[in-house]
Image (cartoon, rainbow, N blue to C red; front, top):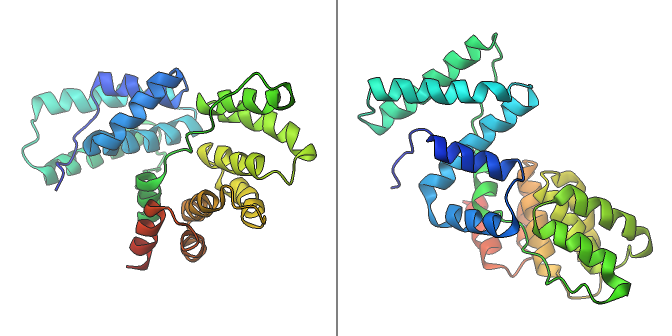
Length: 246
């Protein structure tokens, strides 16, 4: 069993914030995502940090994050963590103390089982090679560059502008769905995946079924997620479907 992570170092906090604030270039993002896949402890730390970061961001309290980190680090130096269970108890107590200090904002992030599965199986579609020479598809591939750099909102704006003229195009429908899901908007992603799955063309069918299943899982609609995952030939999708059945 993997060792329970303790808290974030300053270096990890800086790295996580840089990723979440879209301050990495394409190569840095790719290297970081590869590191998360190979290091389960770091991935767990990142997911914990991401949850608290989003909660603080939503409440306009991101400035308190450094104080939270310092509080954890100072206490950890004076009271070493001897066991995994004590380490977990310490982090919970520290988080509750922070919430009280912030004026009774009783928000505590604990991912449910569906969210943990989503985080374990979701990685954004890597996108298509960008061929900028074809003037007919220049706007599409310009948006693809944004997508591959993690600038999902920009890519979505550009593809949405193209969509009225290409609404039956499987490629643009698929990547609109992929971009919405990567941008944490699963309910907006599903209709685009449906358009791909309703097409008679075979392109992106398996991928759309897999990501549609993940979108439903992100929305806590397990039965719909399972139904979609059973349509994919993707091995990760089949594995996830089995876990949802267990």
